[in-house]
Image (cartoon, rainbow, N blue to C red; front, side, top):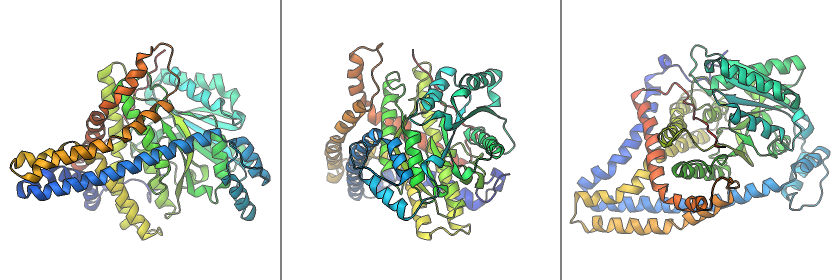
Length: 530
């Protein structure tokens, strides 16, 4: 049964107030984009000053982002080298060895804290369940994901796996999922294919699919007498391949958590599976998204559920799993959990990658379209603004008022900046000059803006460096010139930022303004080259 207290209201249930908050992000974004034009008509000099201040603000932000990317990369490299199995053994026995390259110093502090104040679970008590959502992806996409779970340093015989597939995929999809279960079930503690049939008041998407699989998992746990408080559920898309240390690191982090029922665990999505095969614009976008996830991992106040994440099975049962009324069930799960548990909810980073595909379809036209649709779907997270406003300000809850307010403001600012900043940074400096060519300030503005942007471009060398450090080995089918293209592709950064990120976000916000809701999860086609 749907928990009406935290579920998104149906279209017929949305109040005028709720609609106003749905309109708000689009209204603000379009207002900001029109502001340089309107202000230039009134006072070009003042407009120039405001635009310079805006450029300087983003210059400072760019420096901060570059520093965070370097820190995040360093953190991820260290965590991949840690001996998580040994650290789990020591956390189990509460005896620690001397720090080394594979045993960090903070591990001793964790042992000391847990010794003085025991946590609810030991590493050996954590049970892992994995839900792999799929629709029409072929075996060539799904099998490597299953194999990545098997190849983990964690014993696959202790892992429960559900292949969550859609009834609308037809007989071929059903046969494929059942065959995969037949081929691999002996590798796991348990494996099952769960067929989801669309229900009334559900959007066509991933949320309903994994929720159905979660309910099947609940039945299995009851049948086997497994306490859901001990079960951590990781959701994966069809192309998501967890790092070999992921489950060991997750076990450790859960066992070190004071209250694992009020935490979700977020690994770092890294879009590198097929990065050598994707067209240059898609490679730039994929690398940018990977780096942004690194940045977020170091900003706890900004960290949200995205794509693959893990959460306690008992918490999922308490909140009736995931929302079945949104196409952005991952990001929305943070807000759903936050309000369900009265603000007593956090996201902990797992500094290990979950390798995912860059967008790649049949031909450039289809690939470009698929990329735009994917980012538009992500940007549709702006729909959470109305939900958060309703729950934070107009629904009784025990969460801190200050925390609710700042979380709402960060959410709103993030989506408005997503839609407006690339366009403002690219074009705003020329607008006052267009309306008043004789103004000294208007004439100087493009020059000043250009110099600020030139200095900011120094940060792109960090991107060059890290993009090559994070690349998987080059496939033998590509010659040396492919590496050269990996360098010059970054001249496309301004184009991809505007054409895909900014315009996709504007599209999503404009649809919300007009009440033209996205009610179908547009699957991003997964392709591989052999």
